[in-house]
Length: 274
Length: 354
Ligand SMILES: Nc1ncnc2c1ncn2[C@@H]1O[C@H](COP(=O)(O)OP(=O)(O)OP(=O)(O)O)[C@@H](O)[C@H]1O
Ligand SMILES: [Mg+2]
Image 1 (cartoon, protein in one colour):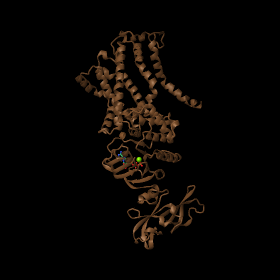
Image 2: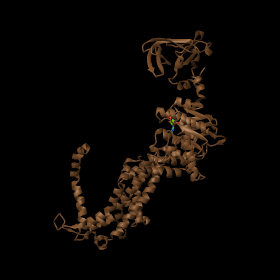
Image 3: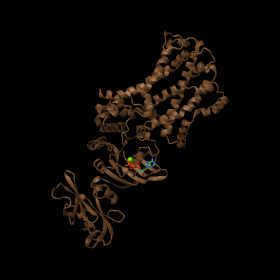
Image 4: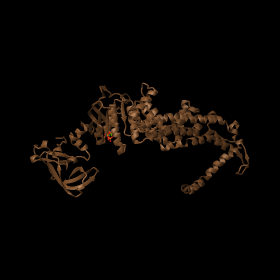
């Protein structure tokens, strides 16, 4: 009781500060279901008109195709980044590799490197290999750019697993592979879950690479589609439609955060608890 | 199974840590590797179990040379200092792990039976469904032992198994490990830097320093007749006191600081003027004998049953005595106590016992 009481002033401050944000989110959701008279703030009618893009492809382009593309990109990120990072992270953390320090430094540098500066080079490479304007090309480039982060995170999780567990496993007669699979991977599971979610979200939100490297209309992802909505030259620009597509685009992200919020925290804590 | 290290050598980054080590552990014997930190005990142990590759010499289990075999094929049970239990598995799964990864599959019922059998031997039947995090230190230790023994290894290696336990548990696990070793008749090596542990648990003790084995003997023999000054100084608590001086006329020993004592009987006719060192254990000062020393008591440490006294017998020379608890001596008192000269240890200038 007293503790809650002491928190009271703090709560007030937090609420005051976040009030504008919450108001904005509130109106964002509200506007997708309502219409307000021109110049007014409060809506006066309920409508599902803004959600018509879900069935009417002329409203905002082929939303379902874009959703599918985005999902493919996001899931591919998981499929590429998680397995490669978990193996590479293990190697960097545990194996006595030649040039290990060089790899470590390289990963850190690449992690900090602004990807935009590589764009032109990447563009030429993709053109040359025939992967320009394909989803595969985008996936490969995006995956490669995300790997340093993934490897670094996974290395941290492997570092937290005691050496002795591995030694004990080998002593117990298990092969290195069995030890990795049955003893080590279970210990870094929180890392794998968190990295999967991160990779998915990163792929889901990506705008620049698909925009530049796969501009073809059949490869449009949600972020690009959303951009085309406002960048369009229409005179009758529909603000509420834009907001509604935005909300639709954000729904999976919110769902993932709600489901995995505790797991995501472990990526900063590192290692298993309890 | 008999274990034999033949001219074993191990280097790290080109510098030898252990060079030409020879060691034999007889079948069913428990041997302690005792030595100060960094002397190469763990290195030796990890080389025996195959985690380190030997850089020279041979490691024999019975007549089988295992030097070139990987850990998995050596059949050695190891208990690590921090137990290294698998945190995501239950106790039962932990103990069963070595059986489930074997090449020739053991069927489930048989695995369960063997796990139960070893669990009964080690008294952890009640814990089988728990996870390591739900166990106390002593219980974790037992599980680690069970896991190491379930495969019926040829050799059991224990690397400081008691270091993480509190004093009371340590006492309990000391006799428990020894009981298991005797009951299973397994050949075992215990690595420790605790002399009490080494002496109380093992048939023989090997004292190591700087990658070399200085002496291998039964605990009593090693305490009574240490091969050199290092061994003498390492064993015994409170430790032995060394007195550096010279032999003098009439079978006596004299220190530059002024203290003189009779030499031990077997050295009485040494010529005078030889530099030697005498080692006086605290239990031989104040308990009768031919020599005597007087001085002022500078320190008294009550230990309950016994008391420890520091006596300044000459400027800069402090002798230590352990005696049954008594109230008649206090700090500052002048005392004259006897020294059992014949049981003093004598060392030459190179530290070898005379
Ligand atoms: N992986 C390694 N690389 C290089 N040197 C090592 C390595 N492991 C051990 N050493 C060196 O080898 C020597 C012996 O080490 P070891 O671990 O065997 O000592 P120890 O007797 O077990 O000591 P402690 O009682 O502290 O465990 C030490 O000087 C140590 O610095
Ligand atoms: Mg050690």
